[in-house]
Each structure stands twice: as structure tokens, then as C-alpha cells.
Image (cartoon, rainbow, N blue to C red; front, top):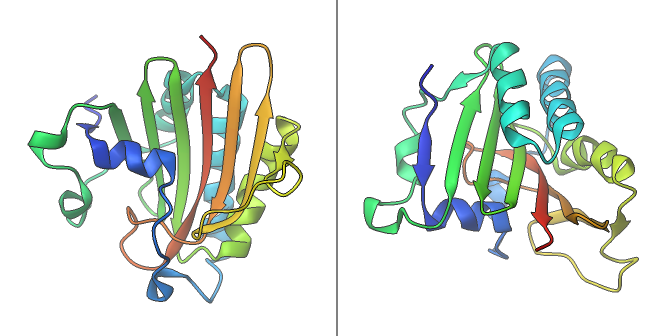
Length: 190
């Protein structure tokens, strides 16, 4: 099976959650439908169960019906060939849902992002919270840090092997219109 593989600085910027201004037109005011949100929660659960083994998470999502994205809007948000150097990105969608899952990996670092068209910031928070509980993470406020403009909440956890960063975001440029994303990132300590 062919999975879309895209390398690029823009992909890493999406993983890093750069502090870009929030476009109010991309913040969903009405919640995503319950069945759509349930599909996003199932994808997030797969990422959480497998973190930081993103290959295993990707395989389980493919087994659950996720496929390489075929969205015609996607090329407009992907990096140019000249910028394709920094990391590897895989983007999957599940037919019949508005869920988009992005994996990114490079040298001991990696992430799973679960986005949903029309997901509100509050739903994004609800999607990320189980990860924060699973990793016993502290909020940025508990750690004396602020939040990025696009973040609803962010958490951090650390153990002997690595650091885990979790965020609930208000918007996500990868979605075609309003919607949000929950991000689970892991950095292996060297």
C-alpha cells in the first residue's frame, strides 16, 4: 500500500506548532457531529496506545480503514520540493469521516496529530486530555509557561526515555476550512 510521504520544513513547523496568528474564520463555532468526533477519539486512542511507536499506530489506523489522503486541497498546503529536507510526514484520512491524521518522524522525534473538520477548540481539548492523563502531564500553567496563540491548552511530561508534549489547538492549516487538532509529540532523550 502506498502511503503519502512528504518531506519538508512546513511539515516540521506543523509538528512544532509555530506560534502563528489565529484566523477566526478557521475556528469552528459549532461542534463536529458526535459520530465524527467519535471517529477522531478512536484515532487519538490508537495514537496514545502506541506512542511513541508511530509505525505501529499508523499500521493500526490503516487496519481500521485509514488511507493515504486523496484530498485535492492538500497540495496547496504541502511544502515545495526545495524545502523537502527536514523530516518525514504521513497523512491519512478515513473515508466517510472528516478525520485527518498526520504522523511526522525524524531522528528519535515524532508526533501524531489528529484533526477533525468543524471540531471546536473545546472538542480539541477533550481529544487531547486523555493523552495528558495517560502521560501524567502537567499543563503549561502548572509549569509556569504560557500558551501559543493557537493553543487551547498544552501539557508536558518527561521520563527517563524522553519528553512528551501534548497540545489542543484551535485551528489546523492542514484542514480544508474550520476545524481543530490535538497533537501528541515525543522527543527521545539522547
